[in-house]
Image (cartoon, rainbow, N blue to C red; front, side):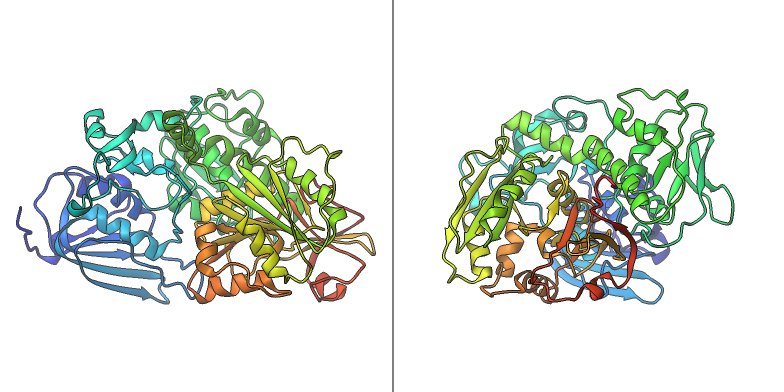
Amino acid sequence: MRRARSATPESVVRRLDTPEAVEALVGVEAAPVSPLRIEIPDPSLLRHLALPRNPGLRTTELEVRIQRFEAPVPRWRGRLGQIRHLDGYELRFDAPAGGATAIVRTARLTSIAEIANALIPVFTPSTPFAGAGFPLVAIAAGAGEGTLSLLPTPTVPPVEAMVGRLQGVGLMRADVLIGGPARLADELATHHIPTAEALHGSPRTELPAIDLNVHNPIGRELLFKPSRPARRLVLLGGRARIVTIEGAGEPIEFDVRRPLPASVVRALRGVESISLAGIPELPEGLAARFAEIAATDTILHSLADSVEIAPEALAPELVDVIRRPYTQSMGLDRELRQVEARRIAMREHAGYFRLASAITAKTGERYLPSVSVILSTMRSELIPGVLQMMAKQTYAHFEVIVVAHGVPAPSLDSVDLEGLDYTVVEVPNTVLFGAALAEGVRRSSGDLITKLDDDDWYSEHHISDLVLAHLYSRADVVGKTTEYLYFEEVGQTVHRTFATERYHDQLAGGAMLLSRSAFDALGGWRPTPNSTDRSVLVRVETQGGVGYRVQSLGYMYIRHASKHTWERTASQLVQGAFEQWRGWRSPEVGY
């Protein structure tokens, strides 16, 4: 074992601004350094530090200073992941400057990758990714930074450490090893998928992959805030600059050949739209950056028809969207354009979906989460309509559990449900509402759980939107809000001012989703007659979890003329409305 050399502070305080700087420091064979002090601009570079390397730098004391840290919620404290031989840990949030410092000490020399990986959930929501029977996936040493875009969590899954007293006969240390040489995989894992193969997915696609952990709309501009100055894209050789067309605003510059870093994504939060009208042709790599930008909800528009984009460079459906003109606006018009492009970008380009398809092709096992949709109702006449909405869902892996609460289950023989996987359970009316929902969960099998209300409207993208938010936010619970509301009695649709695409503790009970493991840990729905959803959200907060509000397109809360379980007056609900329309205006299609 090499002895850790002590060093002067000047020799170990390293500012790492880029993945290349990280690789230059920790990706080379060197004597251990203790203490090692690192300064990084934001927590995103911890993921690059966490990539397994062989050889990799080791230490017994690592200090990480983060210049810019934005807590997802004010009460955030994070949690330190597992570190073997942990000997001490300190954490300071440097308010009001917005920075943070973590110091980790270990009793034995420990790789920088192991410590950095454990620090990721200190600064970033990272609810565990788990499903019944999912294969154990690990990233091989030297697999490369391209593997980061494949991962469903901010953390990087290493090869499991050996525990001598627990070694099983023929038990490999991973079911699937991503990257690294095949000879190494034969020793460590049942299956091996080279990084390039995982990035292409199965069936193979040449489309570039985006990283949902980085390229997402978290913190986007609020819909009811006035538009900031419009921008356009200017090409400068291998770099691109996003500049204002009129008015003030710092330019945003990036390398078209490399994935957009978190710093650029953060700057894009304040950019509503980018005109592509002046671009004569696309340099190599720029189409991939378009997919990443679209995933952030920044609107790309007005790309000339004369500019050719190969179908393997950018999803053709997304190309069609970015060619259309756009005039900056607020409210529903803005969100329709944002979410249309985002859904395409994530569906066609997300690296995690590539990995999941490659794993299924290699092992025959599923690596996409299944969803259990729970509906409890005392109005059996509404069940067929709800099931028909669910039959149109674009997400493939889900089931519906209907709890007929004190009413007989209706006959569904004449209802076309297009192969929908559903189960109807009857419970007596003596059972409380929360207990009826709990019975539905007990009859379900999904990795994720979501609840429907029998009288609200859901588009075909509803489940997919929630699953995507679960993936890119890594919050304990995600959900939509009652942002779009229809008043049945007066025939009025209202768009209310809710802050969405943000970490938040208030979500709509009829449109929230969480993992089965989180649901069980919280105790699920309490056996109460009402406020059952609120009881779950209360425990998320009191137990240190975080919620996330995704955009609310595809969910319409319907306020009926009859008595409603949500005891608020119409005037209270309309208060703060941003825009209104006469009649039914679907928030999904805009009319």
